[in-house]
Every structure is written in C-alpha cells, then in structure tokens.
Length: 73
Image 1: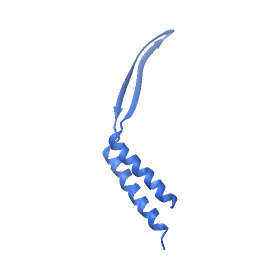
Image 2 (image 1 turned 45 degrees about the vertical axis):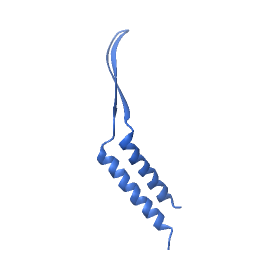
Image 3 (image 1 turned 135 degrees about the vertical axis):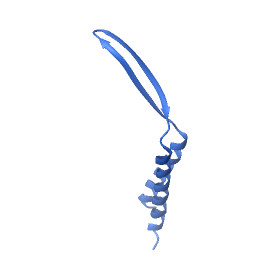
Image 4 (image 1 turned 90 degrees about the vertical axis):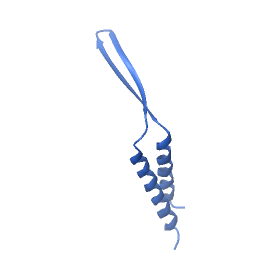
C-alpha cells in the first residue's frame, strides 16, 4: 500500500486517542535565594481540544481513502 495510506492511518489513530488519553503537564513554581530553594510542583492532565481531535480523524480518513485509491488504475 501507499505511504499516504499509512500516514493517514497514524493520523486517524492519533485523532481517536486524543479523545481518550489526557496529556500530563507539570509546572514548577518557586523562588531561589542563595542556597535556599522553595517551590511547588503542580501536576495536571488535559485532553486535546475536540476540534483538533476531530480534524485529525477527518484528515486521516481522507488520506487513507486517497492512499487506497491511488494504487488502482
């Protein structure tokens, strides 16, 4: 099969996973004065925007169709 099909498949899988899997994010806030370091690390998990996930799914599907049809004459 064509590489376009495989790239589309990867984009489609990433789009579907973006609806389910949250991306972890860590932020560190603190103050350093000389040898003293006082800080707080916060953790949060956020999902990707549904618009971006939907766009990945649509683009991946279109690329898969184009890659599958490209091999036929």
